[in-house]
Length: 300
Ligand code: NAD
Image 1 (cartoon, rainbow, N blue to C red):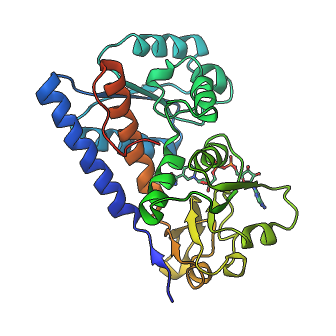
Image 2 (image 1 turned 120 degrees about the horizontal axis):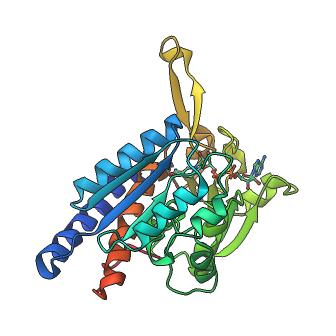
C-alpha cells in the first residue's frame, strides 16, 4: 500500500492560522502585539531568502516584524550591543540571529547573549539544558515541526522505536530529546554509526537529518514505518532545462514511499513547518512574557 504523504505545507498553514488567531486574541483582549526581530549579518544569499520569508510570514500572522541587516564585517561588540538593545525592548518577544555567522564572530557567544526567554530558535544553552531536563523551554523550530507532525499522525509515539540520523545541535540532538520526552525509544545515528542500514531497519520512526541527498534507500525502511525527511539538498536538474535545479531530501523518496506507512515530501514537508514553528515560538514567548495563557498544541 502506498505511504500516506504527510503534507507539511497544509499542516504549516494550519499552524500559522492558529498563531494568527492567538495574535488577534492578544491584541483584542490584552492590547499586546507579539514582535519578532531577525538579525542577519552579511549577505549569504540563502540566509537572505530565509530572512525575507520569515519577515513576510511574521507580518501575515499579524505580528510585528523587525529586521536588522548588518555588514559582513560587523564587530562582535556591535552585534552584542544590538542584541542587548533587543533584549531590553518590550515590543520584541522573539530574537533570531540568522546562522551561519561570518567566521570572525563566535556563534556560541552571540546565541548565549540572547535573553533565553526571547530565544525563539531554542539554541541558548539554558534552553538546551531545560529541554534536556524536561523543563519548559523554547524548542528549536525544525525538530518542533517534526514532533507536531508525528503527534498529529500517530496521536502518541510512546514506546515506538525512533532512529534519528544526524547529531547536529540544530536538528538531530534536540529531535532526539523531544522524542525521548514523548517516551519513544530513541537511537541517534551519525557518520560513525556501524551498520547504519540495520539500525534504521528497526525503526518505527525514521528522522533523516544528514544533509546528504537521497542517502536513505527504501530497503533500509521497516514496512509501515513513518519517515520524516529533514534534508534540503539542491541538485542539478538538466531534465528541467539548462541550469535548472531541484530540491531533494536525505531519503530516496520513491523507494522509501513504496515501503513506509507515512512520509514527508521534499519540498513541502518539514521545510514549511520550520517557519510556522518560529511564529508559534514567538507567540509562546510573548504569552510567557506577559503571563497570558499560552495557546494549546503550539509547543512541545
Ligand atoms: P549538519 O551538517 O550540522 O549535521 C549532519 C549530521 O549528519 C551530522 O551529525 C553527521 O554526524 C551526520 N552524518 C553525516 N554523514 C552521515 C552519514 N554518512 N551517515 C550518517 N550520519 C551522517 O546538518 P543539520 O544542520 O543537522 O542539517 C541536516 C539537513 O537538514 C541538511 O540537509 C539541512 O539543509 C536540513 N535542514 C532542514 C531544515 C528545515 O527547515 N527543513 C532545517 C535545518 C536543517
